[in-house]
Length: 279
Image (cartoon, rainbow, N blue to C red; front, side):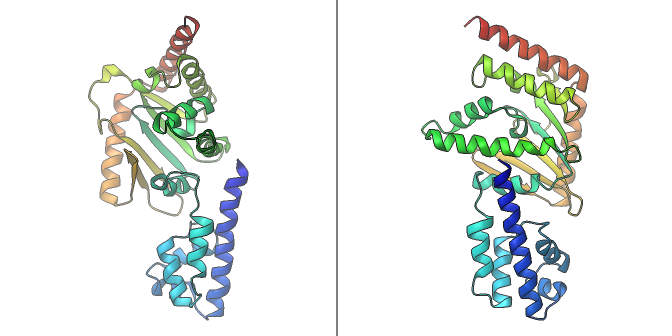
C-alpha cells in the first residue's frame, strides 16, 4: 500500500526538481514565475519542494511561460493526477495526507479512515453492485491505504463525530459491523483518534444529513470538504469555513462525551455480535 503513496510523492519530487531546473535555466526567480502564472512565489517554492501537489491549470501556464512544450501538463495528467480515488474525492485525499488536523462528521457510515476491509468492501459493493471483483478490491485497497495516516503518532490529529445511525446500520451484516465497531473502539482506546457519538436522542442537528470534514494545515488556510451523491466540494472561503466550524462546534456540543461515546460504540458492537450469533 505504501508503495502507491510513495510513487505519487516521487512524481511530485520529479515535477519540483524539473520545475526548479527549467525555471533557473530561464533566468527567473520563483516570484517572477509565480507572477506570470498568477500564483505567489511561495506557491512555486512549494511545488519545487514537493510540499504541494502540482495543479494542472498552473502546469499549463508554466509550460506557456517557460516554453516547455507541454512537459509539465503531461506530467500532471499522466503521473500526478492518476488517482485510485473517485475524481470528486481525489483532491481531498491529497489534502488529507498533508493535514495537521482533521475533524469529520459522519451521519450515515463510518468514515473511510476508520473502515475495516470487510466494511469498506460492503460500502463499495452497495454503491457499485455491478463492479468486478478487481475493481472492488482496488477501491478497498486505496481506502485502507489512507488509514496509514493514523499510524503516524505525530499527525494528523483526528476527531470524528459519528451519528448513532452509523453504529446501528448493519453494513455488511452483523458480524462485519461488530468487527468494525470493535476497530473504532480500539482506536479510541489507544487515544489515536477522538470519537464522539451523536445519539438519536439529540434529535435535529446542525447540517442534517451532510458529511462534513474540516482540515487544517501548517502552511495553508483551513479547508472544508463536503460530500453529496457522487460529488464533493472543497471550500476554502474564510466565511464558509467559519460557518462550518460553527456547525461542527454545535455537533460537538450535542454529542456524547468521549467516554460515554465509547461505551455506546462497544454496546452497539455487542448487539451486532448477538445478532450474528442467532442467524
